Image 1 (spheres, rainbow, N blue to C red):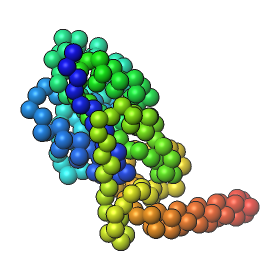
Image 2: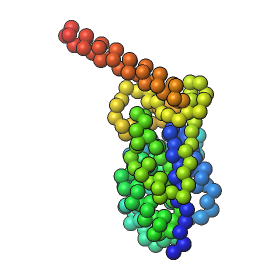
Image 3: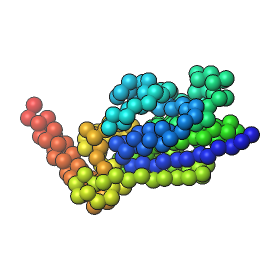
Image 4: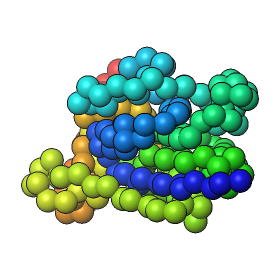
Length: 203
């Protein structure tokens, strides 16, 4: 069986992630299917939409293992390219990519965040690096100083790891402003907690 390339795009900020996946998939004038996580409902479930307005139809799934059956076995066999957006949300990412690229002969293009807002690995994205023919880490520009931004700073006080959002929730920052931003967020959190305790003592 002819084996195709498997490409992984690691990205630190959601604004650029879907844009780059979309641009890369548009280059293929072949049978393409795009998959995204059903957890992302911001723009509906039937398409991926970048923040600059580009749109492509997609399959919104809870897990990747169900794709072949839902897409249809015959239709799947005719596929040349599979694009996966929001890859960090799929627990079965490694198994799917291994099967699709090595055994089914598909070109697989994966876009996902390599780390969360705490700069720790996010989902299984880093686990699939050994499977990839090529890995591209894309960066943005720090919203504060304009330098190369390798990290994501969360603007809200929410501590849950999976918090889907765009520029309203996250901003790309350089190392300096990530560290200073985390310090500022922690100070704000401390003030708010102290205020809650003070208010509670007066009730």
